[in-house]
Length: 77
Image (tube, rainbow, N blue to C red):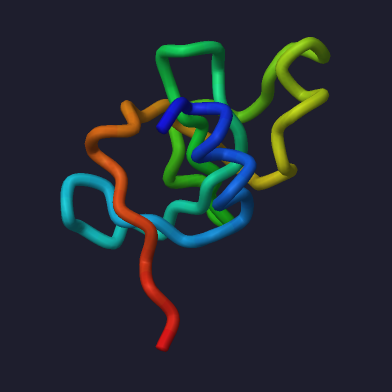
């Protein structure tokens, strides 16, 4: 699955990072390298993006980048 496909399938969903719940949501993607994680608080190390990136990123209070291989969508039961 590509970053774009993952993002389109799971945008706004909560994810685990390296098996831990860090309060992150799928917020977008950056080309073929990274998934953009969004946070409702300021735990992320990035506060804003340029307009080019903002066109496909869901709005959160802070962000960070992560590789797809480290993410797991939290299943809703």
